[in-house]
Image (cartoon, rainbow, N blue to C red; front, side):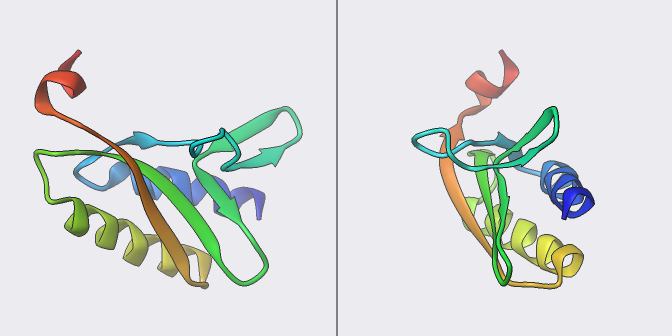
Length: 94
Protein backbone atom coordinates (compact mmCIF):
# COMPACT_ATOMS: atom_id res chain seq x y z
CA UNK A 1 0.00 0.00 0.00
CA UNK A 2 2.91 2.38 0.70
CA UNK A 3 4.19 2.20 -2.87
CA UNK A 4 0.66 2.33 -4.26
CA UNK A 5 -0.13 5.60 -2.47
CA UNK A 6 3.08 7.16 -3.77
CA UNK A 7 2.39 5.94 -7.31
CA UNK A 8 -1.16 7.30 -7.18
CA UNK A 9 0.05 10.72 -6.05
CA UNK A 10 2.68 10.79 -8.80
CA UNK A 11 0.21 9.68 -11.46
CA UNK A 12 -2.35 12.30 -10.42
CA UNK A 13 0.23 15.08 -10.56
CA UNK A 14 1.20 14.05 -14.10
CA UNK A 15 -2.32 14.65 -15.44
CA UNK A 16 -2.57 17.96 -17.26
CA UNK A 17 -4.78 20.30 -15.25
CA UNK A 18 -3.90 18.96 -11.80
CA UNK A 19 -2.48 21.85 -9.79
CA UNK A 20 -1.94 19.82 -6.62
CA UNK A 21 -3.26 17.31 -4.13
CA UNK A 22 -5.53 18.43 -1.29
CA UNK A 23 -5.81 17.13 2.28
CA UNK A 24 -9.57 17.63 2.43
CA UNK A 25 -11.62 20.22 4.25
CA UNK A 26 -10.31 19.19 7.66
CA UNK A 27 -6.85 17.97 6.64
CA UNK A 28 -7.78 14.33 7.09
CA UNK A 29 -7.12 12.96 3.59
CA UNK A 30 -3.66 11.43 3.55
CA UNK A 31 -1.81 8.16 3.66
CA UNK A 32 0.27 8.05 6.82
CA UNK A 33 3.57 6.23 6.65
CA UNK A 34 6.47 6.12 9.12
CA UNK A 35 7.98 9.60 8.96
CA UNK A 36 5.95 10.58 5.90
CA UNK A 37 2.47 11.62 4.80
CA UNK A 38 1.14 11.45 1.26
CA UNK A 39 -1.40 14.26 1.16
CA UNK A 40 -4.56 13.85 -0.88
CA UNK A 41 -4.45 10.06 -1.20
CA UNK A 42 -6.31 7.65 1.06
CA UNK A 43 -6.55 3.91 0.41
CA UNK A 44 -9.02 1.53 1.97
CA UNK A 45 -9.32 -2.22 1.51
CA UNK A 46 -11.71 -1.99 -1.44
CA UNK A 47 -11.76 1.66 -2.55
CA UNK A 48 -9.36 4.57 -2.70
CA UNK A 49 -9.67 8.35 -2.76
CA UNK A 50 -7.71 11.11 -4.43
CA UNK A 51 -8.48 14.74 -3.58
CA UNK A 52 -7.34 17.34 -6.11
CA UNK A 53 -6.80 20.98 -6.82
CA UNK A 54 -7.43 21.59 -10.52
CA UNK A 55 -6.46 24.35 -12.92
CA UNK A 56 -9.50 25.96 -14.57
CA UNK A 57 -7.67 26.27 -17.88
CA UNK A 58 -8.69 22.63 -18.40
CA UNK A 59 -12.15 21.08 -18.00
CA UNK A 60 -12.54 19.91 -14.39
CA UNK A 61 -14.57 16.82 -15.35
CA UNK A 62 -11.96 15.75 -17.90
CA UNK A 63 -9.13 16.16 -15.40
CA UNK A 64 -10.99 14.16 -12.74
CA UNK A 65 -11.83 11.38 -15.19
CA UNK A 66 -8.22 11.11 -16.40
CA UNK A 67 -6.97 10.93 -12.82
CA UNK A 68 -9.57 8.28 -11.95
CA UNK A 69 -8.71 6.12 -14.97
CA UNK A 70 -4.96 6.29 -14.33
CA UNK A 71 -5.37 5.66 -10.60
CA UNK A 72 -7.67 2.66 -11.04
CA UNK A 73 -5.13 1.01 -13.34
CA UNK A 74 -2.42 1.43 -10.72
CA UNK A 75 -4.49 0.53 -7.65
CA UNK A 76 -6.63 -2.23 -9.13
CA UNK A 77 -9.65 -0.92 -7.23
CA UNK A 78 -12.27 1.82 -7.65
CA UNK A 79 -10.94 5.31 -6.96
CA UNK A 80 -13.16 8.22 -5.95
CA UNK A 81 -11.78 11.52 -7.23
CA UNK A 82 -12.86 14.67 -5.39
CA UNK A 83 -12.04 18.14 -6.68
CA UNK A 84 -11.55 20.14 -3.48
CA UNK A 85 -10.42 23.42 -5.00
CA UNK A 86 -9.69 25.12 -8.30
CA UNK A 87 -7.15 27.72 -9.32
CA UNK A 88 -7.14 30.17 -12.18
CA UNK A 89 -4.31 30.94 -14.55
CA UNK A 90 -3.23 33.89 -12.42
CA UNK A 91 -3.21 31.83 -9.22
CA UNK A 92 -1.28 28.91 -10.69
CA UNK A 93 1.43 31.20 -12.11
CA UNK A 94 2.18 32.77 -8.72
